[in-house]
Image: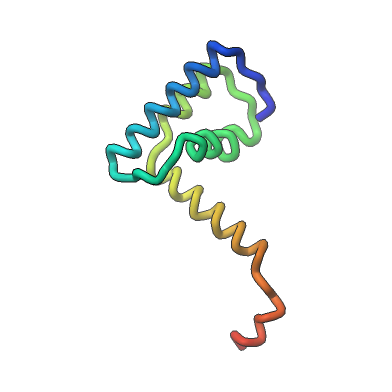
Length: 93
C-alpha cells in the first residue's frame, strides 16, 4: 500500500493499532508489538488494494489473534525456506 496519510489519519490509525495491541496483551500475548500489527495490516490485508481511511480503521479493529498468528507462522516459514541449505539435503536421504 503506497497511500500517504495526513497527520490526523496517522494519529487515528496509530490509536487503532495501539488499541488492538492492548487487546493482544490482555489475551496474554505480551511479546507482540505495534509495528507487527501494522506490518500485518499493510503486508496481508492491504497488499493488493489501497483502502480508504475508514476501511483501514475497520480492518485494524477486525484483526483477530488467530489471523495475526497464522500470518506470522507463514511469514516465518517463507523466511526459513529462503535460508534453507539445499546442499545438506543428502543428510536427509
